[in-house]
Amino acid sequence: MKYAMLIHVKPGQFEAMAEDEQRSVSAEYFALADDPRSQGGAELQGIETATTVRVRDGQTLTTDGPYADTKEVFAGYYVFEADTLDEAIEFAARIPAARLDGAIEVRPVVER
Amino acid sequence: MTVTARNRAIDRIRRDRTLVEKTRQLEVPEATMDELDDTVIEDERLELIFTCCHPALALEAQVALTLRALGGLTTAEIAHAFLVSEETMKRRLTRAKTKIKATGIPFAVPAEHLLPDRLDAVLAVVYLIYNEGYSGRVDLASEAIRLGRVLAALMPDEPEVHGLLALMHIHHARREARFSGEELVLLEDQDRSLWDAEEIAGGRKALDRALALRGRGTYVLQAAIASLQVDERIDWNEVAALYGQLAQITRSPVVELNRAVAVAQAGSTEQALEIVEQLTLEDYQYLHSTRAELLRRLGRTNEAREAFERALDLASSPRERRFLKRRIAEL
Image (cartoon, rainbow over all chains, first blue to last red; front, side):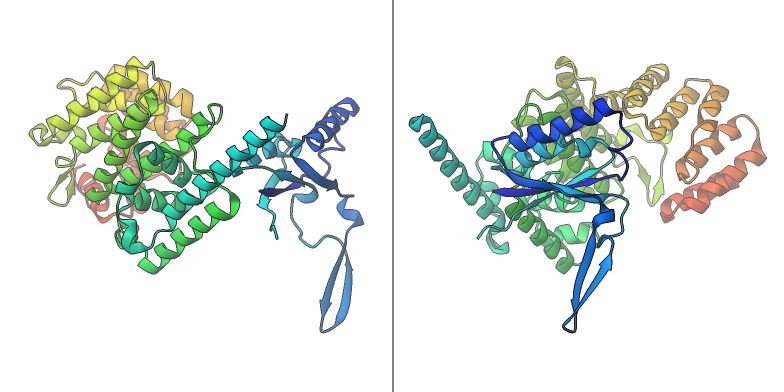
């Protein structure tokens, strides 16, 4: 089963870290990406780069900023292959954002 | 290399198949779901418990699923017990079963390193079911005890399982004495001849087992307290000490409140009041009723009345409201 690990972070949390701390957290993210069960993913640029697009009555409406206005922002994701939700939860718990005031939303990917 | 790969593939297929089979067990139509108990063999029952009590499910769904799949209650009975319509309960169960399937919640006893947390979740569900029964719906209490027995048989080496079973047995033993007609009766005023000696003995046996397994968790401690409280002469100092240990684990102000009651019963009313005054439980009815009792004992009647009235403001159960009004009238 494939699970998407949607990583939500607290804005500014990473930037506030000392440089060596940032390096070790980044290394954790890379290590998780190297896990053989990891099947891709992406880190997104900050919400200040976000553009939201809607189509209403055939018209494209483009606005500045992220879609959801929440305390935590969506920052990236992994796609993870696991047999059970328990395995997925264990992986999610190792994502640094999970302990750094952020949260990981785990959702199965629709498989066709 | 290829052999390993094949074995792994076979293993996965085998697991997938059992998963499918077991998912089907949860899918059984209403009419035949009652037979679930007979069709699920012992070790699969344990897996089923862990599935039903998976923390990825909403707590109310965990409770409903557990009662449905393991407790042998019908959907209508569960709905009735939790005061929701049968339709609502049916939807709740369906949604939970769908989530189990869609998200791959496993039918398995969790791995060793996950077990403590996951077992806590299971015990919490059983205890929640018990407590629903404790406030009057006795069927649910008996049901929870039955589930506790099943768990104890399936996990004989887990002290907390025996601790919870012991706790439920001992509380349940006092069920007939807790009420006089419609009225609440305090522990110290209860007619001990109404206590169920056999149930107490069963509880103490489970407690002994838990202690022999070196259990010192929250359920074991609570069971030990409950056991002391059904002694002929209650050792309140010991009760207070156990509440102290429990408070250290749980950091719960409610536990501290109970410790204060034990300290008062041991004879130190002023020390008890000191503990109570430090608690931040402004909206908790029992903080105010306990404080009121302590003030009454210290002869501070006006303050006691005020505190009783505050408790009365917060009390919702008619039975407890009548009890508090009686206490005020007796001042």
